[in-house]
Image 1 (cartoon, one colour):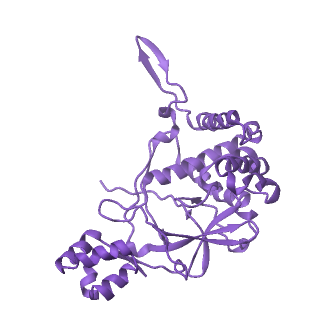
Image 2 (cartoon, rainbow, N blue to C red):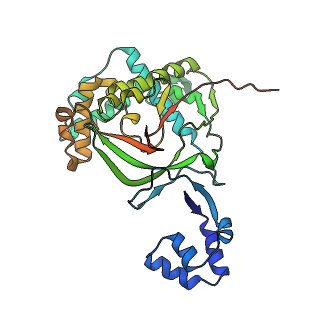
Image 3 (spheres, one colour):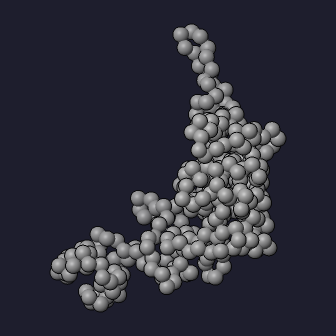
Length: 340
């Protein structure tokens, strides 16, 4: 277990017990853990420390012989309660919807991404503009008219007000109990099955946790469209990307296709449309070239030829000796019955 403390309450406890000089020495030297300092040097009892602790979480497989360099905490509201911002879920649904629209169209504009060269600045500009044009083509389809100087005009499709997602409202999630929070170490799996444990720990939701949002649709997008987009998202994610990694037990993966990838640290694939636009082969060439431009020291320009996929690392974690993909969430839509 790992416990987090309220720094103001801790400082008050130290002041009340006239231990300020000892605390200053600890902060300057950092020659022991906070637990050792409070228990062994300050001689505080568990009863004295209990009011200082805000919450404790299961460390599970996150702690080993290596020390924790940093803990990335979960999003919390002003009262310290865990929640997921509605904007995060809305963004994931938007990506899934755009991917589904591109697939359904059947006319994939492949040339721009296929010819991308990370050494060509003009190609970089063209690729960025092309991505914006795709969003405009599939999502900015709301026609808005207005009158100016007695003349009727139409808002340009590039304007954000024309986005059909304006009719989709997603609330922040209901507060999540601290008992559902665990610590997970970040593991990178290579295409060939090599594991690299990064000295980074995240607060994550325990597998099986249910999180509730309120989704409101006021026109444009239907619940059937969102269901279809979500149902095809995981299949695309798994077949195009995850299946390329030898270390993954294919039979252990989730068969239910109603899943999306949500949250930080889940890798590149969950937040882009390249593979849907270009297909796996051309998409891999584009992504490897793009990553070479961004992270030139890692030699990503060879990903396509040597590994057949890019990025060549899959973001995984371990909990209770079982491996999980970061951020994989099953989505269910259920009507809310209001009583008037």
